[in-house]
Amino acid sequence: GREPKKHQFWFDINKAVSDVQALSDRYGLEVDPKAVVYSLPVGIQQRVEVLKALFRGAEILILDEPTAVLTPQEVEGLFSAIRALRQQGKSVIFISHKLKEVCAICDRITVLKRGKVVGTVAKNETSPDELAKMMVGREVLTTLEKEKPAPGKIVLQVEGLRAFNDRKLLALKDVAFGVHEFEILGIAGVEGNGQTELVEVLTGIRKLEAGKICLNGKPITNFSAHERIENGLSNVPEDRQKKGLILDFSVSENLILGRHDRPPFATTWFRLNLENISDFAEKLIQEYSIKTPNRDTFVRNLSGGTQQRVVVAREFSGEPEFIIASQPTRGLDVGATEYVRRKLLEMRDKGCAVLLISADLDEILALSDIIAVIYEGRIVAVRECSKTNEFELGLLMTGGKND
Image (cartoon, rainbow, N blue to C red):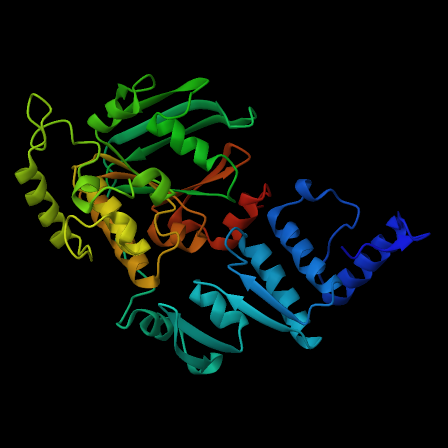
């Protein structure tokens, strides 16, 4: 809406390029003014958004979860730009759930809880643990301690997986890996590099063009989604409301999804055993601390964290042998995040094989025993968690090589 023009009607491309270049140089937001936006990495696209706001004369910038899909290197680049903006007199509102980043870049920090201000503190007067306590109202451990048990037998083995995405482009390119008992394998990668398609292929809801999937040595490549569940696969999906819950079903009904057609929840004539369902729901509500008025409450009326507890309770209570956890803490507060992460570690320690897919690199490093990096549909590196760091992973996630 602010395009420079010449002769009143014609777009002045040369003036636009020079103006954007000048703005880019002034604030340290390096971009190629002539590049096509869709071809740029996510981090550069974000710089374009900031430059667009500055070009329009903005004095206040609101950045809402700006680092959600950025690598550590891209985060540092964004922070350098924010510091330059501050030095130029701009005001920046930085909204984030990543407490370490808030403490790193902000001067003052305001904590909101249920739409109300809990308090405002100066950066040098607080810490991530203190902020977490303000957000939840109790002590929260932002760093989990975990001991790595010895891995057992291979539970999931995949070889040569190839699959197309919804745009008919090849999204998985000869993906191969294995997950053992007592092990969490984390998949690290910038979103959109094949993670969603990988989960859908493993759960049986996306067609596999080539490759082989084995669960406990049994080929399940041609199994339906329901057959995979019956063979010990559980899935915590990335979108709990669209793929993990039926919002207009009760808590009880959601807790038995996938097992509603067999004993003890159904008779041989497929009639529901309401007494067993009620007892099972009450047990899980207590065991997983599901905050609900009662078991008959529609899950639509629960908070995001409580909805995720319903999903986790259902998936973990079926004694699974292999768990897929895709973005398991997305949209959760620090208290709910801590709970879900602890449950994942508990399931690993019970002998489950866990595949963790997360856009949060801190989460990958906190929970994983082994980390596989996915880039453009390929597994480009595999690292032991104790022998890597966020900067090496960030480089690999963007196609770079660590020499």
